Length: 293
Ligand code: AMP
Image (cartoon, rainbow, N blue to C red; front, side):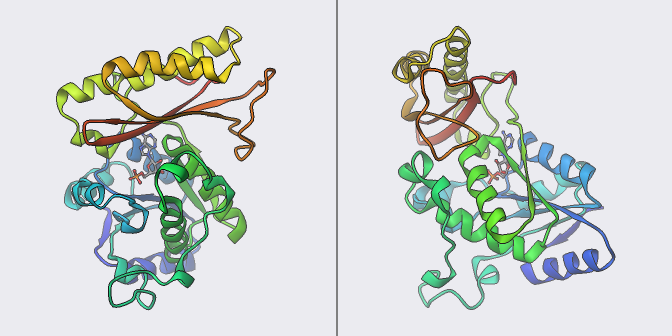
């Protein structure tokens, strides 16, 4: 049975009790509308820790577009039902006021002193196209870590730049251990995402071209192509005819991350993309040197 709390303080108390009893916590922060991608993280957290804790909170601080925040899918009851089978011991949700009881002004804006600086990993890509996004992520993740105080926290490689930002944040704080988990995909190759629910069936079919474009770049990389303009062109040639409007196609060293430069003899690279289809914005990435499907 999964314990469910609809407010932050009882969840904090529950976590405190677990730790007092000597039980280690694995934590999976989410924004809900859970799918197989989230559940894979939860199963792993349950397997590697005494108890798996999940938060479900659509964090307004990390949305640069109010319309995106409004239409973001929400189904807390459905989420709770799915989590039981995945081995989640406790799931909680809360409000911005509960997470920041003394830090919101009369208009509901968070005080500057409560905001957490996301660091250099946030530069470029999502950080460039979604103003304030990673500050919002770092701020809520830091607060969630305070509430749960987990030993390990599980994040998906789907949001690769977020994973880099959170790793830096955890390093600065002295914990928790951050575990990156592989991307779960639909049979078409489309990366699973809560926002996929907002796609029409036709858009959902066409959106698979995003992954196909990444695979095309990986095939060329394996054949020795190192020209970033050429690799970007290959992604675009596959994705754009399907009606995907690419915001960026970027290549980075997945380990160094902040050094955007990849030389002609690069051995490692990750390709990262963001694209709009209809009113939905999707992101995806693929290691060009990796074997993952
Ligand atoms: P979200 O609810 O979108 O904030 O995602 C919560 C966590 O699940 C984040 O760490 C995401 O990276 C991760 N996640 C979302 N989609 C996937 C996916 N398709 N595969 C693996 N992890 C995912």
